[in-house]
Length: 318
Image 1 (cartoon, rainbow, N blue to C red):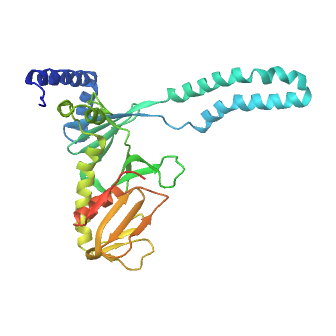
Image 2 (image 1 turned 30 degrees about the vertical axis):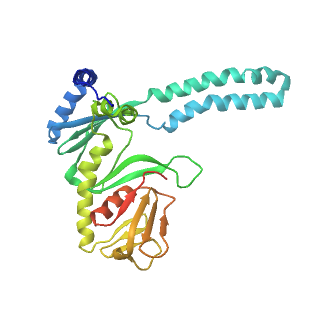
Image 3 (image 1 turned 120 degrees about the vertical axis):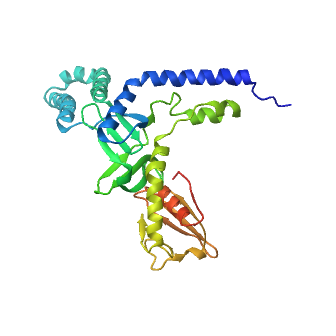
């Protein structure tokens, strides 16, 4: 007979998880208070959540030259010494392995020293990104006119190998705002592996693990869903939406080189991945439209198709 968790064991488990959550709240109490002040100052309302990520800004040209100069000077000196007196050059070449390690360590330390924590404060009226040395950069939810899931090549050999890069939002004024997938909920003591832990634990233990909104959940709820609703209404009204060369119209869907659309009634289902759309008709051969340059926007496109009543599915992999 399978025995479930006793009420006392569940109480102790909830108490332990609650302690972890409370400890995390205390650790970030100052950040939450700052989020409250920022929200009041910008008129965005009370905080819904606070997220953070580590940012390493690119090195400027002057700093790159400063880092490269010693290596260039050393190589040039050794080359000249070899040409002038090869015997005297041997000791300098022999110490090279002992110089590479310290040089690399210095470069890494200089690069990491410029790292900082970027915060994203979420509110009912919008969100604001905050850096230590700059003013908040607010975005109101009702200003967002477009939202796409962002994907980038992950460095694999395959042209269809993609990595999740978050979202790119577009405001009514034409400003594009990238929101990285690396943001973590600062109040979640188990981020970013809470879901994995819950999946590996017994069902009752996994269900007890506290859940906190992820950055993806926040953007989907507050930005993507309203945008898709608006776009679906526009398509029904006769507008044409294009994503990666794929056109979605009131009457059907067409690829980049198609002269006519495939009617919705002739389509069984549509399968989407980053950079790829496969249209499976009721009869005949499936059509695949692939964009090897940009895999972005297909998850949101899937939501649009579902809103139009099309049978569609999305798989978040290349």
